[in-house]
Structure formats: structure tokens, C-alpha cells
Amino acid sequence: MNHSFARLGISAGLLFSSLLHNTVSAAVVDAERLQTLDRDIRQATPQLIELRHDIHQHPELGNREVRTAKLVAARLRELGLEVQTDIGHTGVVGLLRGGKPGPVVAIRSELDALPVTEQTGLPYASTVTQAYSGNDFSQAGKQVGVMHACGHDAHIAIVLGVAQVLAAHKDSLPGTIKFIFQPAEEGVPVGETGGARLMIEQGVLANPAPQAIFGLHVGPGVSGTLSVSRQRTTAASDNFVATITGEQTHGAFPWAGIDPFPLAAQIILGWQTIPSRQVNLVALPAPVISIGKIDAGVRSNIIPAEVRMEGTLRTLTDAQRDDVISRLQRTASKIAESAGASAKVEILPGSYPAGYNNTDLVDKLLPQLEASSGKPVTLGSGVYAADDFAEYSRRIPALFFGLGVTPDGIDPAKAWPNHSPKFLVDDQALPVGVRALSRVTLTYLANNGYK
Image (cartoon, rainbow, N blue to C red):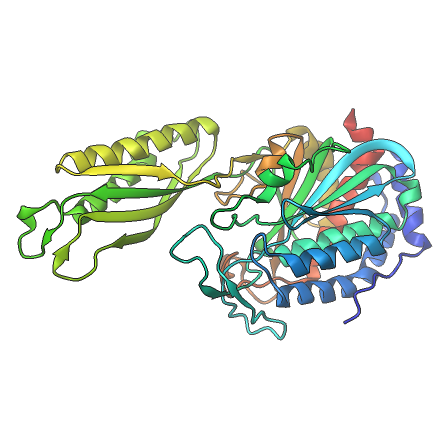
């Protein structure tokens, strides 16, 4: 498979120069110039599609993205970027230094896939299996199917496409672009550290320090359409374990012990009154509390002493998070105590904070998103999904937006969602992502970071 990148022609350079010398909003870029940009990106699109298919066919779990990282590093070196590897385990950074002074901006993509067995039936579907290295000790080492079920393969191809477009004319670039390819966004393996937090600890936001960071995420939606929130983008995510401890007894004599099963059921129902009855829904949308796993018992006629439940909590602000965690613990403890049992709620490592866009960046760069898709941009209020892009947005101004990738002929409202074994990405949405990230980056640099 040929992975070399085609160099862009002079038409892209003319457009590039016109953008850099126009310090007002790029909404004024005329249709002819936009068509020129479209043509140049179209020239690269077949290679980006080929690249995505290759990455999709060879997915790797978090902190294990060895092949993917090597592929990304090789691409960046081909394009003449300064490359750093092994940041945050398998992370890669490509530095594109422009020929003119200016601000530093970062663009981020993820590298990792999910422990999902693919069921798309695509000719380039993954058949990879890998030892599961997730956050459950009981599953560690188990062989599982691996799939790019969250679209990170598309993100990698898009961001490499942006690097191609901009690197071809770096002499005219007024500033520096730091391309960040991050491992383990979906969570770190058991007993390890990683993701955005570790990359930041190891200096990815320094030397040089970006003044802003951009990113996107694909998902169900009309192919090629864009969406953005002026403030909140993603929810905070906390995984937790609740342990209810009673007293073991024979199944025929439940009164001789303390049965933790009905207590677990009562606790789950009690937790659901937190979003519906205990928080102010006028001040802020409700949190989400979901239980995904319950473990207990060894046989049918023994009531066990303990029930262990695992769940996830999604909240929208730090204050709401602290309040709801307190309510989780209090509800479980009081219900268990009412029957003479005990309950403990433990928040697991690996929590993600809520993510926020910089409102000024959204307002200034929204015309670029509109010009990139050719369709109205959906202004949303964020999602309950979590992404550790939030770690960057907590430290520097950020712009994070969505890209619809549902193939034609499928109703986006009924499309398989991210993390589904049947999740599909329309390749024809890739150039829209390249165009959007390229335009917001060029405009940000041309305006000297809006200082």
C-alpha cells in the first residue's frame, strides 16, 4: 500500500497567501478561492481515505498504539515536520514551524481504538484481537476484538490531511502548529497512566506552548455537516464502584442474614431520584447516573454477603460533580444502614473533567466552519459523552466541534452510534474535516491569535 503524500500545487499556495494577508474574518473569502481550496483538498482525499482504511483495519488499544504511532510519525517526517515520539507512552507530536513569526496553535487527534468486535461487514473491517488492558482487573489479559468504533481512524486521517495542506506552504505560515496525536483517550489500561493528562504532564503544552488548541469528533449526523457549542462541549465522567455488604445466609432462610440484593435494587432506584428530584433542573441540566455491571454470588441457593456494582456518572460542572458524588455516597450508605448492612462508593481513577469551548474563539471562527461545510452549522449545548480533550481546554482556549459522518441512505437519527460494532464513517466527510481545521487554523494565525 502506497502511503506517500502528494504535494499540493501552486493553486493552494495562492489561496494560502490570500488567507494569510487578509486579517479580517475568512468569511470574506470569495467562492473562487473556496473552490480552489476544495480542489486541492480533493487531490489529497483518495490518499487520506486509503490511510483511514489502513488504520481502521489495524486498530490498537490504548497505550498499545505502536503501529499507529509509527505510521503517524513517518507521515509527519515525510512532510518535513519536527517529530517527537513516545510522549505519554505512544504519543506523537509533529511541529510545523512557519517561515514568519506568529502564535503557536495545537491540533489534536486520538490514536486508540476500542475493545469492540466489528460487525460492519466492510471490506476493510478489523479482524484484530488483542489482550484487553482496560480498567477491570477481572478482564485483564482476555483476548477481545478491537475496532475503531469511535472514529479515531477518521480523526487521524483528517489531522494528517491538515498537516499536508499546511506543510506544503510553511514558508508563508505566520506562526507554529503543533500536531498532537494522543494515546488512550478511551481510558488507560489497568494499573497504568496515560491519555491527555500524562501527555500534559510530560510537556506537550510547552516548548513551544500553544496559545489555543483545536479538535473535532465524528459521529452520527448528515455527512459533512458540522456542529459546535459556544460553551460546554462534553460532560465530566467518573466511573465508580459501589459495594453493599450484608450477611451471607441460606436462600431458604433470608431472615437469618442480611440480603444485599434488594438493597442494591433500592440503592439504584434511590440514585435515580438524584437527577429527577434532588438537583435544580432550572439552573443546570440533570446529571446522568448509570449502572453497567453487577457482580455477586456463587450459586442459586446462597444469599451472598456482598454485591458489587459498577457505574458511570456524567456531570456538567465541578460543583455539580462534587454535589452528586456526595449524594451517591449518602444515598447508598443510608439505604444499606436501614437494613443493618453497609455500603461504600469508590470513585475510580481516570476521571475526565467537563470540557468547554472558548466562547470568543467560537464566535470568531464560526464563519470558517460555515464556509467549510457549505451548510448551516448546528449550534448545540454539548453532549453527555466525555472526552479528555477537556484536559487541554482546562488549560488553554479551545475549539472542539463535531463532524457528521453518517453515510448517504442511512437516517442519522437511526444510525449506529459511536462505540457500536456497526458504527460507520462516510469517507466523503473527511475533506470537510480537513477543510474546517485548516481554515480555523489559518484564520487564527493570520489574526495573530486574536491578541
